[in-house]
Length: 125
Image (cartoon, rainbow, N blue to C red; front, side, top):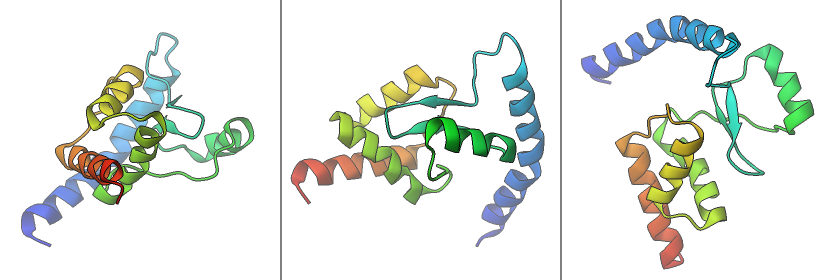
């Protein structure tokens, strides 16, 4: 791991708790238009990682069985499942997510994974 990567990882860890606090407080505001999560389809909820207090409710009310972050490139493949289920192109999948959670930033590497997955699915591989 290079120095820049190590500094980036360290900065991300340093900023995690303040941004978590900001997100939690913002979700509690009465006029908040940014709920903790949104349902994308019958199988996928997209949002912030659930806190312990919310985990039990998500299991009971939303039938959540697994939690996945999209921080790593390989995790984006799970986003591809919704694209495949709805027969979306990569751009259509990104647009659908943007309509539901407009503050989400899909990074270039995630787009590349979506495009590669779509190419493989349409080629039948």
